[in-house]
Image (cartoon, rainbow, N blue to C red; front, top):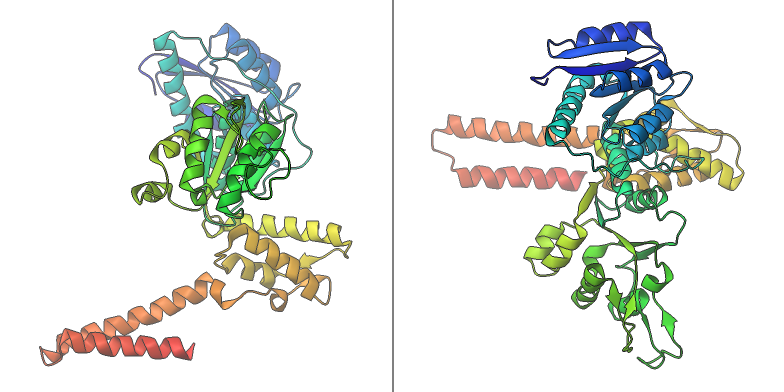
Length: 447
């Protein structure tokens, strides 16, 4: 903790939790005050010039988000950590957008609170030391009725927090991740929680449009500028002026279009294809790719200066196999949506079917899971989806199957190495390698 004396206010309805926090955060340099009242917490924060406020989402008479809003309104640099059993991912995004230092779930708070509190107190100390109060303050936004993104894993919690942070700014965002992880969903969430959410949001897949047409799609064209241009057409930059333009698969954008995009990012100016007039556009760019753009830059297939312009803030979405705990939530969400869409009977997963979904590798990520659930609804003969109803292909073999195959090959390799030691030079390494490759080939053909 800090070398100077600091004050922490903790507000929660659970007296046992308050007692635990006092012991858990106890330090000679920290004064801790606990209460079950949101009004008292805010009063103390002001009177004691506290450095950190830890508040539960379900406080009374004002809930945690309201406490956060009022505290940040009065003290723009206030360090506030919200805690609780968070049922809505939108609550996490909105809390981070308003200005929460962090959001901790009660299920994992025992492992995270001390470290996060120390970081918050360190930040508070640095702000005091710098004697700067130029924070622009918190802004609030209406919450959509439904969650925009599904998932409660720690990895996705980090994504929600990053969305909340970048939504407050108005800078380019680069979203990275494998194909099918939901980059467009995250892009839409950034737009919905931004100041531009009342304006146009346009999504373009750079890989799906022929290179000779992409420039016209983005910037528009004048009549007669090329064969087939029978009339003037405005581009996407004009269409979503003051809004957000999502450029998916930016890594596939031709170099000649990249140079024109760079100009828009630098100056906000562009011209239609075949036109002489310089036009202005105030558009926020969100780009996404499943490629490693750093490698594309090294290979001279992506402009380095454009990469730096786009990579102001990066949001990385982990693959589904790295957040297995989200699979049941996503599966239930897609099942419910499919039932409502097709006006089907109420359906559910058998325990074995869910275990199969959780063990699958999901090379196609969330998109593959959604397609799998859609097909399962069609294939199921009853109102319970069974393992046989899940069309999982060999290309997406389960982790357990893959691990078993790798273990068999490792055992074979160990036996060949042991044979080499016992042969005392009678069998060469080349002969052993050839024998091992033959065995692997036979196993591959047999499978």
